[in-house]
Amino acid sequence: MINNISILKNITILYAEDEASLREITLNILKGFTKKQFVAKDGQEGLELFKENEEEIDLIITDVNMPHMNGLEMIKEIKQINPNIPIIVATAFSNTEYLLEAIDIGVDKYVLKPIDMKKLLQTMSQSLLYHELKDLYIDKLTHLPNRNRLKKDLAQTEEDLMALINIDKFSTINDLFGENNGDKILSEFSDNLKKHFCKQDYKIYRIEADKFAVVSKKHDKDIYEFKKLCKIFADNIQKDTIIIDDNEIDLNVTIGIAKGDGNRAYKYSQRVISYARNKFEQVMIYDDSFNIQESFEENIKWVKKIKNGLKNGNFKGFYQPIVDNKTQEIYKYEALIRFIEDDGEVIAPFKFLDIAKKAKLYPHVIKVMLKEALLLIKAKNKRVAVNISFEDIASDETQKFIYEELKNEPEATKLLEFEILESEEISDIDIVKSFIKDVKALGCTVGVDDFGAGYSNFNMLTNLDIDFVKIDSSLIKEIDHSKNQEIIVNTISNFSKEFGFTTVAEFVSSKEIYEKVKSLDIDYSQGYHFGKPMSFDEV
Image 1 (cartoon, rainbow, N blue to C red):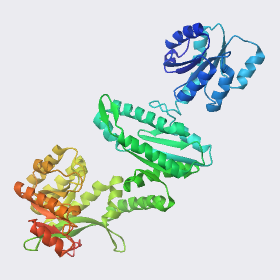
Image 2 (image 1 turned 135 degrees about the vertical axis):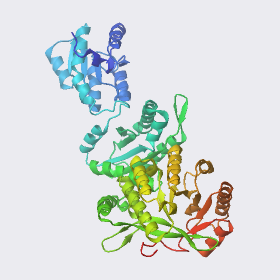
Image 3 (image 1 turned 120 degrees about the vertical axis):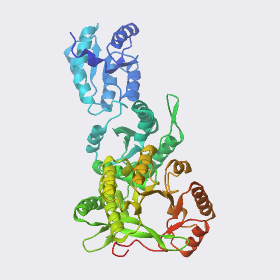
Image 4 (image 1 turned 120 degrees about the horizontal axis):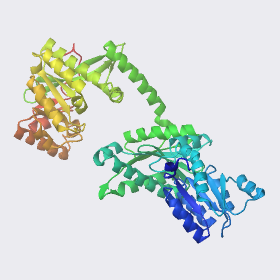
């Protein structure tokens, strides 16, 4: 009886036999027990099939006496490529000297001809120990070596040239087309990697999910030539859509390249990907001048400071005036978060806000901001606007906190405004509609901030029950000498008037800009021309 017969179904074999009738009979039986079969008529053909399909093949069964290249010669060549691949020899010879030679070159087991199929299948079953171990080093979806294999390979060399390739926003593709189609995309993507790089003396790995690695087999390869090769691949991926079940799927990649000992090459190629995305670069070589290590240390420092600052009250609201363009009198203030160092130094949010978001601490910051705004309203009877993102609105915890605070301060809500950040994607408009309805029922005013920055569309404005539109600084800061910006802002202004929204211009930093936005019938202005953000005491 053969043990683990079901596991044999997972094996892909290479079978080499020159005798046609025996090959046909044995192959028909093997087809009933194994997943896939590559068949060769001689050793040379078997070697070529192995080179082309190394990552798929789990086991080799070969005759010895074959034309062009005999079985032992083929085995020697294959063992140079993969010394661990299990090989079973089918031979008519049984003398000890011959079998010792076969063992010396790496043959694991043998069966005598004429082949006893029960014996052969039993021998194959015994080889599955290797198959199980191989799973530790092979990605099951793409049949590429995995992260374990990469780390092991890198540990065996003194210097490596490698690239990490990350498919941009692959989770969105999974959400859009489903995980089954996502797997098909990854399989085809890995095939494209093999076609592009394997013939160029590179080895491909799948690190995890949508991350792949390419390592040069020639450690003296010029890094800039490697970058050109990576750039061609990235351009081809962007240009050529992947077809899955008649769906055209567009992909983009970001590639980080580094050279050095295995640990350093892997670490810095991984880190440079984030740096490349921030710089809007498709392919980037790591350079010590990037100070990536220093930035990580700075991030770690700020995560600790944010946590301690939330406990110790280091976060304070600062308030920038927003003026009526007709009277130039202050109509309201926008609440802006600041971190106050122990020595009194005021730190702007660009230093810590992104870190707070990535460290999942931002919900605590928005809570501080709301409390600070309500404090100013109650203490000084000022109208105050607070920024809120879609992520905040979609968070049940943050929503609950906001509603509780508003219900506890019913007299303050008539002077509180929420500015929904339009520069961040709103993936569920119904959640936003519900939030607007709820806070307006509690007395608040609601508007859209950063309109024109990233995800703008007029249709969204008409679908939301908002009171005002704040026009993004990118459309205002050069409006005094940019005709294109003037046309866009004028369109927004006219559209808003038609639907009853008031308008606010950000980044009004000079008299000339103020005069221009005023002439376009913008209702309010905010910017350094009218005042910088100020502390609670300065308001």
